[in-house]
Image 1 (cartoon, helix red, strand yellow):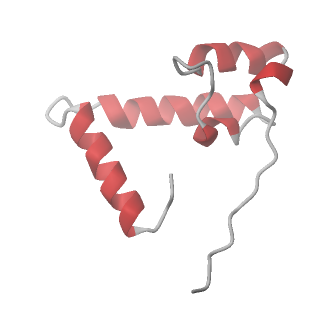
Image 2 (image 1 turned 180 degrees about the vertical axis):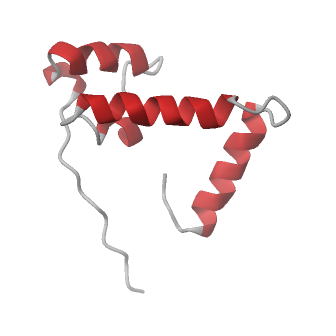
Length: 86
């Protein structure tokens, strides 16, 4: 069947990051040393990366009645319903 086109966004790899971007990569890196693609798409504009992360952090931690694991499960279901491969 027909496949959907995949968006391509230029990003700076971790090993090429300098200055503020390198600092943010260091802050946001996963245990394997990589940075999630959802953040890396902001690598050409480190300030937007920082704002994106702060918004995500606020949304995922601001309501104590809804634990993070449940928020993550909701995100997975919504992504699946939207046919988002993230």
